[in-house]
Image 1 (cartoon, helix red, strand yellow):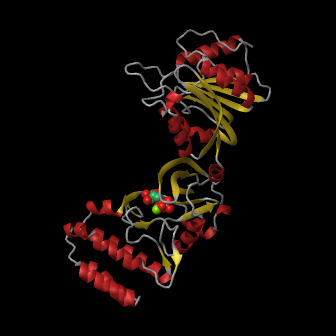
Image 2 (cartoon, rainbow, N blue to C red):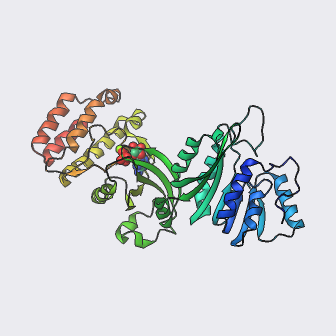
Image 3 (cartoon, rainbow, N blue to C red):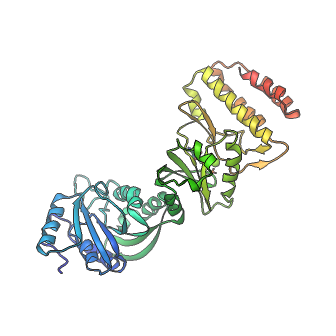
Length: 411
Ligand SMILES: Nc1ncnc2c1ncn2[C@@H]1O[C@H](COP(=O)(O)OP(=O)(O)O)[C@@H](O)[C@H]1O
Ligand SMILES: [Mg+2]
């Protein structure tokens, strides 16, 4: 079989990068293979030659490349290979054992448009788009061979991979005159495989907190087998579609395992994001779509704000009664989210502890006192002295009457 199809220079021609990648394709190709951005078809045809390859799907966004490759395949009467015109995974179906990607990876040159070469303004953008979807098309133990250049910014590629909980290893590199080429083998991380086995898809980095990296994911309820959750909890989880996944950061010393334990306890009282499940080094819970309290306050009426603050005070009181101290309640700037139905959800139960002297209500009053300039604009009339006085009495004697006194001041 001849590797090079009859092509003109319209279609991206194999060069150093292709030959470097080809060495690893020979080694890694098996089962179902996808060649993304196939161009001349060099990788797809290399994979096709391996005896343990069952089927090859070659994809290109370029009509001419697809047509030429299809023609070549027909002329050579090749079987087990299919060519599809598709923008990345748009028209790709099913799962693969190996996905090959030699992307357009050079940063865009002013005024020149060639989608076979340029990977977006910064070079790694097409890789970024590819990584968003690749896991959905990869078997749990599948692999990706990814080629890119130093011009693409290796640290950006590494970051993008970690954004999707993908693990990677450098297989090979090659210095050329103006750049260096890298070949990565990419696999699903253990956490990603566990999440997917439980029906979570489209895992994507959101932000990081003090201890964890927070990702979002979409829950496919058909795949969420009941055995993963107690039936009792399962009943109220049926509305959750978007989930948050907190994954322990390698550099963080505090283990994450605690958070699930606390969430079970506070969820009983309707507090905190609802826990779905957890595993070693990660916790999966309801994603709360909304705004941080301090930002949210800006655009709300006094009455709406009063209700939300009152509800938060009640949650703090419930935690006090449980004897659970939630850390950082005096500065919960990034730890309270208000959703569109004005439900307030406290986040981050990692560093709770049991105590006879919980400080949730008093710390939250401290916070309200610091919010006073904002609240004054909304015509709240309490004074800091009044509120602190009531908080002091509550602290001496944690009781319903002393708590009611605090509440009344906000009204
Ligand atoms: N369930 C969630 N819904 C929406 N945003 C969340 C959720 N969980 C975490 N976040 C976001 O992630 C940030 C970090 O989460 P946090 O629980 O504080 O992690 P850490 O323990 O690392 O500090 C939060 O401040 C919030 O912006
Ligand atoms: Mg936090």
